Structures are given as C-alpha cells and as structure tokens.
Image (cartoon, rainbow, N blue to C red; front, side, top):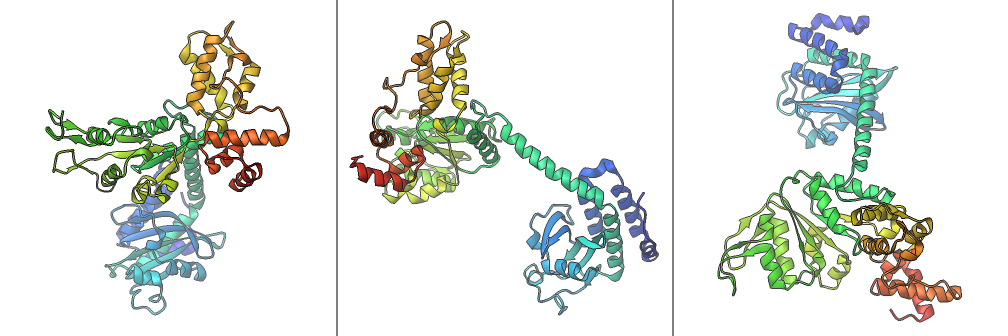
Length: 496
C-alpha cells in the first residue's frame, strides 16, 4: 500500500464519506499493477466526478511554459486531445508558485481574468494542483468548469491536493507506463512499416518508406495522387492502399484514362440511360457507381480531357454523379486514387490540367521510386519473376547480377520482367549468364568508349531522349542539378 506523510493524513479530517471512499478506491487502483493500461484515465475520471468538475487535465511539466498531456478527460469520460482547450496561464501559475490554486470565479478574479485562455475558453472556475517529485514540480492536475461553480470550494481543493499527493507517490509507475506507451507506439509504427504489402516486393530503404506511407494513408479516406515513372508499379500501390484499408471488403475498380475517346471514357465512368446515344439500348451503371463504398483508381489521370476533368471535380467535391442522358444526381461513397507519370504542376501552368482538380487530387501524394534507385531489390524482383515464369530452379550468375544492377532501367519493373523472361528462355543449364541479359534495344545504354566529354554528350543525349526533353527528370536520373544539365546542353550544343 501507499505510505502517506503526516501532513497528508491531516487532510482526512475534512473529508466526507464519498471523498474517503474515493480516496480508498484511487489508492487501491494506483497500487494495482493489473490496471496499468487504464491507471491514469481512471484516476482522473474519479477526480473529475468527486469534485463535480466538467473537465480534468493531467500534464507533465517540461520547461518554460511547455507541457505534455498525460491524460485529459471530460465528465463523459471522453478523451480531450487539445491542450489549448485548457488554461495555460493557470498551469504556469501552479508551476511558478509551486502550490495549489483555486479560482471560484475566474472571470471576475483580476489575478487570472486577463489570461487569454480564460476568456477564449469561457472558463468560470478552476482548481490546479502541483504534482511534486524530488521537491520539483513534475506536473499539474487541473480541473475546471464552464457552467458549474458551486463545487469549486476549499474542501474540494484539499481533496484534489491530496489526490495529487497520491499520484506523486505513484509517479514511478506512471513514468513507467508513459515509457511503455511510447515504446508501444514506436514498435507499432516500426512493425507497420515492416508488414508486407500485397503483391509488392522490396527490401530497399526507399521501398520500406513507401510501405510505411501506404499503411498510414490506407487508414484514412484521403484522396491519393500516385506519382512515378512508367512501369514502376503505380497500379500495385493503388491496389495495396485499398487492400490494407477499411474498404478492403468492398470493390476496387481501376480505369485506364489514356488514349480512350472522351465519350467512351465518360460513359464508362458515369454510366448512361437508355437512349442517351445511338446504341444505348438499356441503362448501364458507371464504374464509379459500381465502386460504391469501395475504391476507384484513375490511372493516367493527366490524359483526361478538360470537360471530363470538370465532371471528376464534382465527384471529388460533392461525391455526386450524373449518368449520360440523365438529370438525376446520385450520391456515391467512393475513395478516389489517381496516378500519372507526368508533371501535373507543369500541365496546370500550361492550362492543360485544371488547377482546382489538381489540388483535389493532390491531398496525399505518393512517389513510387524508379527501379534504378532500389538497389538489391532488382535481384530480389528478378528471382521472383523467375519463379513466376518457370518451375525450373534457375539461378543468376554473379556477372549477370552485376549487369542487372548496373543498368538504369528506363522501363522500370515492367522492363525487368521482360528482360528476365527473355533470359529464362535463353538460359542453359538452369543458369542465367551475363550474355542472356539483353536490353530492349540490344545494346547497353551508353558506350564507355571515347573521351569523357564524348561519354557525357552521349549520356546526356540518351537521358534527354528517354525523358522526352525534360531537363528536370534528366537531372534527377543523373544525380545532378537542373542548372548543370542546362549548362551542358548549351556547352555541347545538344538539341533536345
């Protein structure tokens, strides 16, 4: 049991039966190791109830007016997450004076009525008591009320002060709980990032970061814009977000938006009524409606026409659709994911893509790393593709592995699959050799023959061609600044 000081025992004299019973229950609870997970919240709930307050706060004092919430509750036993809802002025006063504070009428008391928090939060009455550890203020327990002032009495101040003393005697347990909770949150976050993502393979640091982002955003209904080069697996990221979300049991529908006639794409997305156009012999639901309560993935969103962009904006803003040939507006509950390999900001700047739609889509952007940045994932993926392609046990020779990892993979994962499929066909004795690794153009990207200047020219030409003249992307792939690329283009007279 807790050991109390003589001055603490003196406080018992003024306690009524209810308060004495509460003190007994609290002290039992504070000593009950089996109740560690609810220790802090439960004891604060009791304190709020006994002093008939509306809210209670238990904070740790850090330094210079800085506090950390340990627990914050209301009379309904609900958690309050925002420290700004309480009076920081009273908290600081308790710390500064190192003693309990009672304000029966905070609005009318000149000592505290000028505190901004008292006025903004319309706080009528407050009791704040310090929690002392090693003769220093470790934290503060504060209760307040916006409506009820009659219970903020000297008797309840004594009770709350005694309660704080009990808490201070149990600080080691509370500090231990704090540490365990922090460790638990850290371990949960770490475990989350290590959990496998369906259909996605990767152990590189960039992929582990990607997996962590997928897990985080999947917990929400936020619209996600998936960015990355062609062939990086943006569709797999979209599917993964759905599969680890709360919508996983509902439909996941994807629609490729590139190179599709506008009227056909619109009818696929929104559906149509019978007679809406020639050939519409019956009503048809659009894919957005079919995906209701699930996830809808718009692949290559940058290729959508301006009129259709306006209709998609309505879906994102109002969750509404209108079928072709119909006048009835229908509500849908669908999460939107979109992907593109183009720079939407440049398209917005050039008036090709709607700015308002861009911001609606870009709530949570995720960039999928290109294969060349994924290090040993290349070999990991290659072995996975071998297992998919053939039942034979085929190994990759050391030189072949070096050749795979030294290539820049302009076609990314999709290109790697093609290269491995080709190598499996050519492999003899169940072993892929370096000569079995053949690029799509049947040659290495850039010859290393010639002077350094000649190699630079060939390499720069190849990257500018590969990224359709984008100096930004060429610079990123080379690990240099855009300014460097611009200077070299001018120096070498390269026409991109």
